Image (cartoon, rainbow, N blue to C red):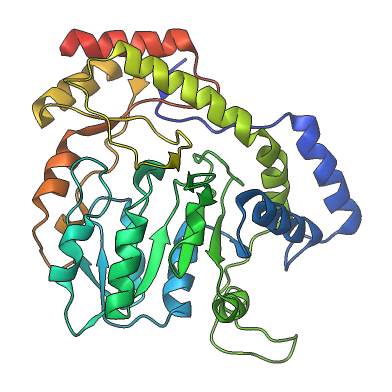
Length: 358
């Protein structure tokens, strides 16, 4: 069978059917059903966060976060992320100002943030790239000095801790993606996390059209709710997360042992981090080499992914800005297949095909 860059983990069908049976009996499909409430509580307990709101995808999580913080103006952000990080800012009327990345961690470079701040700057939206935490203390210090709000796109960072605390406890708001390709998934879904009670109040109403009871509205809102069917999948997958991470770690370490670290450079994981092995990116010597590696893998029905590509500062709907490190890395980075059902023998085959080119 073809080997794709990722493959969704599906729990035993009978586990999911047990939840479906209850859904069919209750005929309660959405609007904060009992499974949604249960999943939110279990996620708060598992991740060690105060407020968590289960929503229908990771992009609406970002959009609600921007609205809840009332961001209007320039937002400093990373050019090296999935497009939703930038598109959500543009969609909500903010101006993304791209700050280049650290060449080692691939996260936004805090040493460049202050030079990008202007009187129009209202916030920072940074991504924990591949689940690798940003320089949290540096960003927090800069945000406090300049009275800026901070959103972390933590789409890849489920279960990641920094200094024994969830990375989701940093910033004003963190957002998660529970898309089918993620380590923890609900088929489609996401979450908004905050430790601020006032923000939590706003988010609670904003994700449900602004409703404050059936015939009243607290303020403007959107349909960010998710369903009992999606929550049921999350409740099935959640207990497996430690096993999923353990398997991914074994596969990642096998890649590292087989590939030439001088020609396949790996991002540097921040110190004091408990990592989740969400992805296995390698940075190759040149785009030419990357294309040869990709073509060789494709010829054997193996599909890695140029993730992230292109650098977001080159998108057609943003003001052109320079980000040379991000542009360089985006041309040379390739994410290799990594998922629970991937076999060691397949990792060895992939590594062999890469080494043939190198």
